[in-house]
Image (tube, rainbow, N blue to C red):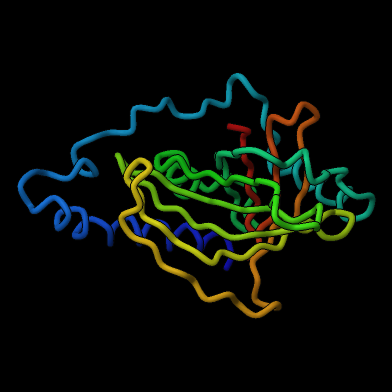
Length: 208
């Protein structure tokens, strides 16, 4: 699943959740999804200097031939999506980038305690709309010198705060169909992370 399809699925789930929310509330009042606004301040780029597409392409070449130096523990934590460049396009995609910020899209990497594999992550990615959150949960690992981060999601949940409203297992894809990020660079202070998705899009996260 490439990053564009992943975002479209997130958006579709958000839209499809509206009838469910009305059903859960008995239709007696408007859904918070429709009435509340996201009060979080948008992630500004003024305080942190983010690289442009040309800079990222240069860093990507270095990562392929020399390695990026990105290691397992440097990725642990929450990362918020802020920018997307589609394949072969030099300018930031304003629609996808705006959607990522509006819906507070983020990805979280945690060490899997139950495994002896020191490079295996628990991966959770989510979007938020009003009081509701959609989460995809699964696992991933680092492979190679660049490195690659292949991952799979096996669970999707619709939540309101800590309450799980819906939960559904996802079928694990074949090995050759697994999603992945080819990591490009990590800012020296760990403030931003960049990668290329399976479909060719380049993304930037900020540490949350």
